[in-house]
Image (cartoon, rainbow, N blue to C red; front, side, top):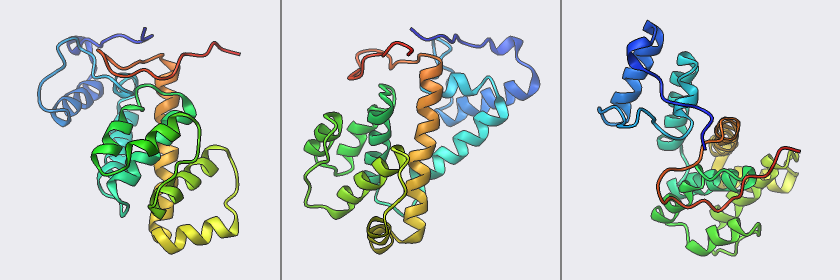
Length: 192
């Protein structure tokens, strides 16, 4: 159960109300029936400027990179698996919609390097895991990345993994889970 509730638009200060209204427009023009936007948005709204900047940055990473959209969604899914974020795992279905083989996501969910004939898929996996595990990129991995994705693509994949790590931390801090019958493959581990 989420540790955060809906905000009342009638009690918002000007900065919060402006960001709330902007978020409503961005999400389709109608406020959510239960007052909750879902994902990290309700948490981010507690800091209106941060919410705005995170939405801009996330939108750029989601829509305007030089990378194949399936690779973007795969990298998000790898971050979701690593941080055990059920909300973010919804990106696995989107990765499949954008051409990533279901078996690749099955392997990610099982904690295995996928088998794929696509070098971009294997490279996205290797890079994402190296970033998430806090490892330096080997010269060979760096050269593979530059050769296939270029410097711009390498920067973008690093930022995608970093951004969705921040999203996972927000979701975990406020114990946010997906709504309805959305998949919840990850159990909630107790605090150590």
